[in-house]
Image 1: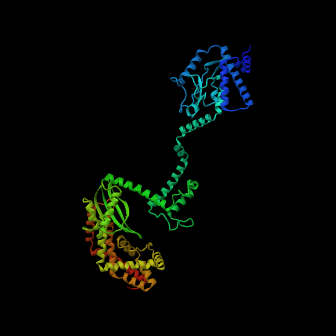
Image 2: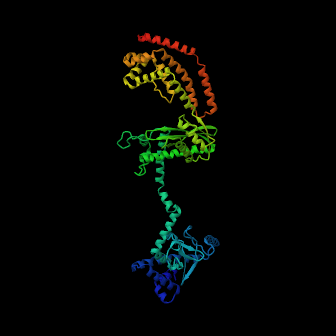
Image 3: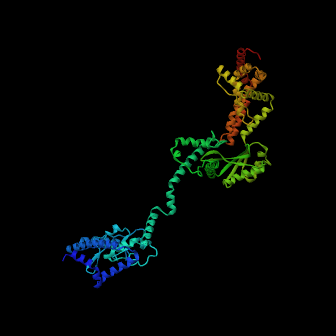
Length: 585
C-alpha cells in the first residue's frame, strides 16, 4: 500500500482513531481543542482551512521521512556535522537564548524523531523563517517562544513558555494560536523595544541622539556670535547703538556685523533660531563679553601663578555715570615682562582707605592673595601717593614687601607742566598756540582757507593740533605743526583781515614768539623720547634712571649758539615771506 495514501486515509479518519484509543494522537487533539477554546473562536470554515494546511505540511514531512527511510542511515559525515552544531549551541543542560543573544535557532540537517501513533515527526528548521521568535533546545528537543519566555509577564500554562512544545504533529497549529495571543504580541513589542534600546541607548541617550542636529546647529550659530564678539573687543569698538529696533538705520556694530555675515554665510541664511534663543539681545551680548573676559583673565591669572610675584598699577577713571578704578598687573612670564589689564571696578567712596580696600578685593577675587606683591605704583595725586594717609600707605600695611614707585612718566609730565607755568614767555606761547588752533578749527570757512593756502604755497597739508595738559606729546606736535605751516598761517591771517586775525599775526611776528617756538621744539624733542621710553612695558628702574640722566645731560648741553643758528635760518624765511605778502611787522 502507498504510504502517502495510508497517511491521507489515516488523517481523514482521525476521529475514529481517537475512539479506538490511540494515545498520542488523541492527546494531541485534546490539547489542540483545549487551546482552541482558550485562544480564539474561529468559524468552521477557518478550522477546515487550517486542517487542510496541516495535512499538506504533514504530507511534506511524511515524504521527507520516507526518503530518509529509503536512503537508510545518515552518512558518518552528516552525523558529525549535526553533532558539532548541537554541541556549539549546547551548554550544561540549558541551551536557550538570553536577552543579548536572542532566540537560539539551531539549524540541523536532521532533528530527533518522535513517534505519534504509527507516524514519526521531528522539528523543522523551516519554521524559523516563518516565526522569527521561535527557538529550539537541542538538549531537550523542544520548542519555545523566546519573547514570551524572556520578556513575558504573567504568562502561565502556555505550551511554548512553561512546558514547551514537543508535539511536532500539531506544532503549526500551536504556533499559529500562540502568535495570535495578546500576551505574545505584548512580549514581542517589549523584545523589539529592548533591541532598540541596546542599539541606540537608553531614553536619555535616544533623546540626545534625536537632538544632535539641533545641538550642532546651535553651536555653529554661537561660534559666529563669539567670533563677532571677539573681533569687536579686539578692535575696541562699541557693541550697541542708540536705537536697535528693526526700523533703525544704524542698529549698532554687533547687529550690523551679524547682518553682514548673513549676506555671505549660507549657514546663517538657512538657520532660523527660536525667538527665545537668538543670543543677540543686549543681555546676551553682555554675557558673551563676560565669557570672553573670563577666558582672557584666566590666562593672565595662570601666567601670574607660575610667576609667583607681581606688581600692581592702579588709577582712577571717571565716565559720565560713575567713578571707576582700573587695576593692572605687571609680571614676568617665560622670560618676558608683561603688563596686563586685570579689572575695572566701580568705587563708591573716593578716600584712600576705600580705594586700597577695592584693590585688595580685586586681588582676592582672582585668587592672587597667595602670590607676593613686590611693588605698587599710582599717579602723583595726594590721595594715591600720600606717604601717611594715601593709598600706597594703606596698601603697604597689607603687603609690607611691596615697594611704592611713583609713575615716572607722570612725574616728567608734572615737571614740564609746572616749569612752563613758572615762565611767563612759555605761558604766553602756549596760549597763542591755543588761540591759533581755535581760530582755524572752530570756523569751517577759515579752515578751508587755511588748507587752500597750504596747497597754493606748495606745502604738505598739515592739521593744527590741540594742546593737552596731561599729554605733553601734543605740545610738541602743536609747535611742529605751526612751524611747518607758518607761511600759510601768516598769509591766511593777512587775507582774512579781521581784528582777531590781525592780532594773531602781530604776535606770531614777534621775536620772542619765534624764539620760544624753536626753543620748545628742541627741548620737547628730547623729552618726547623719554616719555615713550618711560611707558615701555619692559622698562625697569635701572633703565629708567639711566635714560633720565641721559636726557638731563642732553638738556644741559643745549647752548644759545644752536638756537642762534636756527633763528638765522628762520629770519631768512621771514624776510622772504614779508616780500611776498608785502606788509611789514
